[in-house]
Length: 224
Image (cartoon, rainbow, N blue to C red; front, side):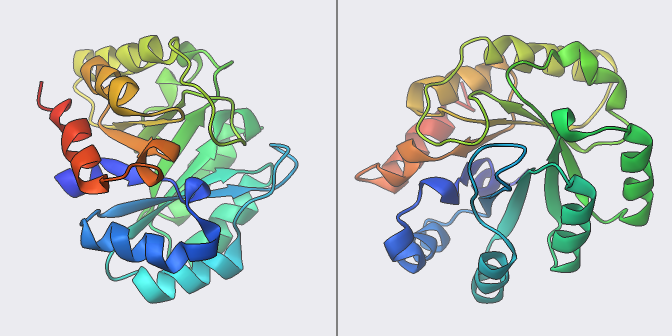
């Protein structure tokens, strides 16, 4: 995995009045991936980005960054079809939204080109998802309650990361472990030490006075 893709800024924490400026800075740093949250007001209380903004950003920046599309929605099958049709190559759905994983397996066969992820909310035990490793390319540990920005990191998330990493190593697997929520310099380093591969970073990234220095310090935790 390229170093520029290990940290994935979450646009939910960006300055919406100056989104072009924020995106231009991400490209200049350079960072290879941007996290794009889609919230429907049903699976989570809030409503966030959707098709119009994705189309606009992908048209302007799709050759410069990848978009890590995180679906916090009830109708995940429809949304996967929608965003894959718009060119998304990396999409994550939620364990808690899935009613039948046979549907997901069929979705996987229809879209073999997708990097498909499964997110676990804080209430979901890791043991429920380990048997699904052959369907998904990535497990996303939610280290906050989905749907709202600016929350504090939940320490119990570290044990989830460790268990996912141990299962991966014990079974010679290669899925990615991603973490989303409350990631800052301290918690980010703890996640890397626990076995995480990539971090979604919102408020701590966008509020950093020197974003390049913030990234250097955070990535140094990957090398410890």
